[in-house]
Length: 366
Image (cartoon, rainbow, N blue to C red; front, side, top):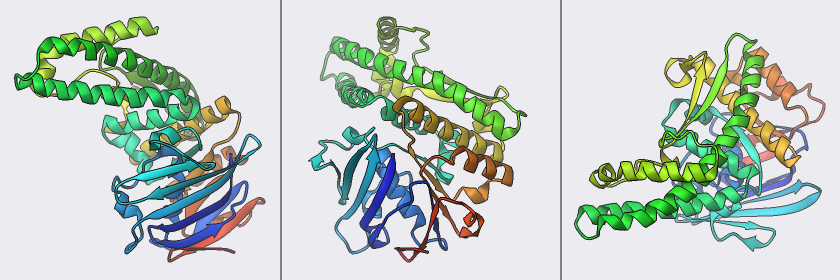
C-alpha cells in the first residue's frame, strides 16, 4: 500500500497542502508546532477513523473555517484508489472511489497504516479502553467482517444498558433482559474469538521483535484477559459462558446501571519478565513494548494482506537510542514510511527518500 498523492485543506493549521510522497521514505522536518504531526494525524484518520490526539472534531478544523478536508490517492494490489474525508464540527464523512460510507467504521480496513508516536505509549500506560481500541483497529484491518460485529455489539450493549436503567426505575421487568443477554453473548463471542486469535499471533511476533530490540535481555508476554473468565475455544461454548456470566452478574448490573461482562470490559495484559509493563517497566522499556506491538501489527497486516501497510513515525526517532533507530530503519527498509523530525540531516544518506520542509502549515520539497 503506497500513498502517491496527499492533499489537505483547512485541516488544523494547513490551509491548502498538496504533495507527492516517495514510495519508500519520506522525511517531514521543521520546528515544533509547524504542522508535521498534523500530516501524520490526517493520514492516520483513514485507518483509525478517530484522531490519536483529540476526540473533538472542531480541533481538527482550521480556526475560522467551518470544515476541513483530507484526500489520499494510494495504490493497493495494483489498484488506484481515491479516499477523501470531510470533517465538520459534528461529523466525519468518508468517501472511497466516489462512494460515501454510511458510517466512519465502514471505512475501517480500507486503508492500512500503522502509527507510532508519543501517544502510542497510551496502549501501555493508560486504561484498558486504549488496549481494546488498539486491538479493534488492528483486527479490523485484516478481518473486515469484524467491524460489523463491533457495530452490532455496540447497539445491543446500549439497548441493554438502557433497559437496566428502566428495570432499576421499575419501568420494565427483569426477565426482559434475557433476550438482550442472548444477543450480547452471541455477538460478544464472535468479537472475543477474533481478538483471541489476533493476540495469539501478535504475542509470538511482538515477543520476537522485542527480543531483538532488547538484545535478548527481557521477555515480552501478551495475554488476552476476558471479563467473563472463559476458557472456551469454540463459538458455541464461548457464547454459553458469556451468557452465564451475564446472568450471574445481572443483579449487580441492575444496581450499577451498566453491563459489567463482555468484550467491552476485556483487557490485554502486557508483561516483561512476568511483571506488568504498565506498573513496573521503565519509560524506555514501555517505549520498546509499544514499538514491538506496532511493528508486530504491521507484520501481521503484511503477512495476511500480502502488502505492506504505510508506517507513520511521529517524533519518535529522537526518543530511541542509536541501536533502536538502526533496528527500526532496517526493519522498515521496504515499507513506505513517513517520519517527522526537527533535523533531516540524520537521514541525508538514505538512497530512496524525499525530504519535505513543514513550516507554518505549508509543505515544500527540498
